[in-house]
Image (tube, rainbow, N blue to C red; front, side, top):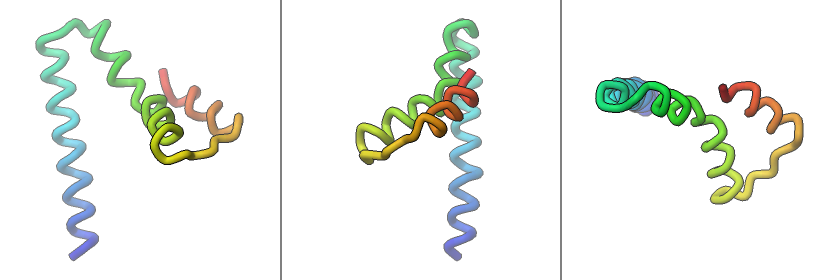
Length: 69
């Protein structure tokens, strides 16, 4: 039961995220929308440092910047 919930939540969140992304592209300029949507790894790291007191090494931060466009 728990695995089904996690799988459903993952699929639903991906679907909702894509719908918001396409809706943003429909009403906004792609040159402004795409960089904001593509920076989620960097935003995730910043939030992890601020709220979860995560300690990141220079190696892990380098990996984040390689993933972010």
